[in-house]
View 1 (cartoon, rainbow, N blue to C red):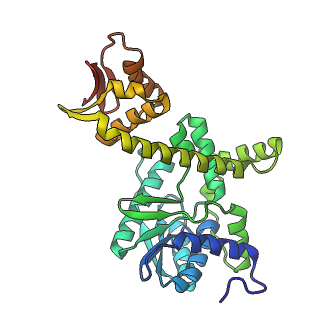
View 2 (view 1 turned 60 degrees about the vertical axis):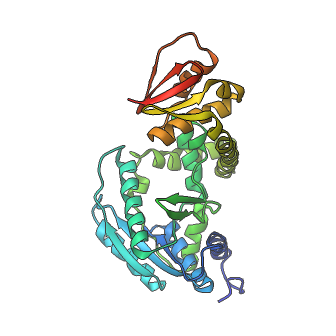
View 3 (view 1 turned 60 degrees about the horizontal axis):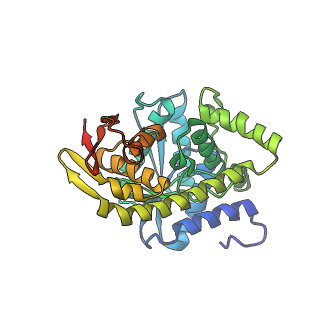
Length: 331
């Protein structure tokens, strides 16, 4: 079939084109997994991937994760798998246990990603395709802005990332949620409506159902697109900063007893934005911890405003100035 043939719904063609672009570069003969919840976004993604993969010589399987958090989840997962099989995909349902760490949303997400990672390893898959849309990206940016989480959070989700050595592809980050719903309708696919997607206990639902509509009403249409563009621009900036850090850090970092040290003079010679990123990068790479902005600024003051202040306790480590270096040591 040619997706440009007369009568093909434009929304279906839009989703297929997004998937085709995302799969460019995946080696012919490789296996890819589609994370299929049964909702409109992942269902439209699965249908488009089934269509495109046959032309690209790829094997496709669908993985549905049953979190077991609500009545009927087992039946919903089975229905999603049956739909995947009807689309010509291999289908697998994985049931997971969801903990409590970080709250219900974070715990469910962590369990889901672990299950997808394990399924990809079992299948020898080159990539996992996720159904996040432009609307999901806009919600992520707003949530990050509300938390004051800084530029890293405001970058939103990447089109291409990695999960323990497996590529994560998000083909639909430029596609609206209304488009995936319309694509499902055009192809006669009936999405599952997850009741948690309408539960106002969850911050993301409140952003989706209340905050974004108010912003659209008060500021005019196009807010979601603008937020997604902002995320893309910040990600480009971050990639440039990361390249600068990679070029700089080998010359200014030395291993120290129980930790690592950074040259004060080299930090001072860099602009504040790059200096703060180097500090955060050192702590993240050496101690696997993230710093808040206030913590980062306090460490930076050991460089820019040194007056003999003592060590600074940070997540997983302690920072102090020793002569011409800032030492980070494990706590």
